[in-house]
Amino acid sequence: MIPLEQFILEIWKIRAAQPTYRLGGSGVDGTCDCIGLIIGAIRRAGGTWPGTHGSNYAARYEMAAAPGGLGPIGNSVDLSVGEVVYKVRRPGDAGYDLPHKYCGGDLLDFYHVGVVMAVSPLKIWHCTAGADGGGIRVDLKLGKWSWAGRLARIDYGKEGGGLPMEEQETGRATAWVMAANGEPVRLRQLPGKHSQTLAKIPVGTGVQVLETGSQWCTILALGKRGYMMREFLRMETHEAGEAR
Image 1 (tube, one colour):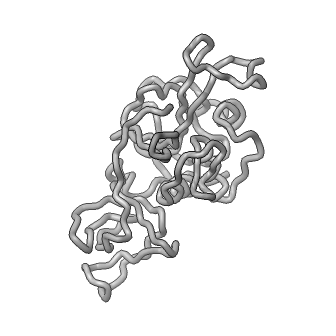
Image 2 (cartoon, helix red, strand yellow):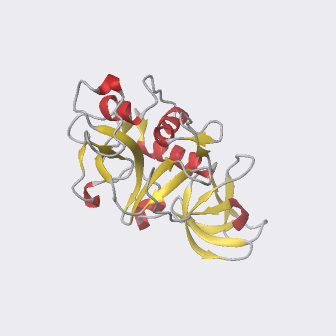
């Protein structure tokens, strides 16, 4: 099984690449779709996805057994980081389009899927189409997300374990580390290229920005407070748009 921490890190890395939406994409060619965000992260972490590239397949064959299995959401407090959430249509609903191969079961159309990246405040990341080419969006409310559960291929460990340090401490990450060459970026003790290196932060790591400057930002990364050049930080934008 894939550790939750690694799964979350790979989700960050896919988003850092800013993929556009393409049905069937999984983050390997600059494109992604909703289930592709999850499949891509699992594969990047060394796992496999032997079945169909689809959210209905995932809901029926890739969810953990109870407890923690797929079920209706009571409220956002019921969720935990790394769980996946679904939007569901029922027979008779507008847009209902359950593939025929799943019509012998519950008849629910799990038409869109996202990943819970924070609970307080709530952040659900999902890849969706849009006039701008689409991409990974952040929902801050449950809205139409109505079912949730844990993936069978992810090791969630103990409650709250395996999360990036800044997520455990604040419930949010306001930027993520990026570099064109893919190499880790230095976190420095003071704002200057010759200052002592406190840590090398992997590309895709979520960080909390404490202060911003024209060239350097004060950040909290992997439990360490230090300085990083602003050019290596992609600030998070909060988008609460609904999926298609």
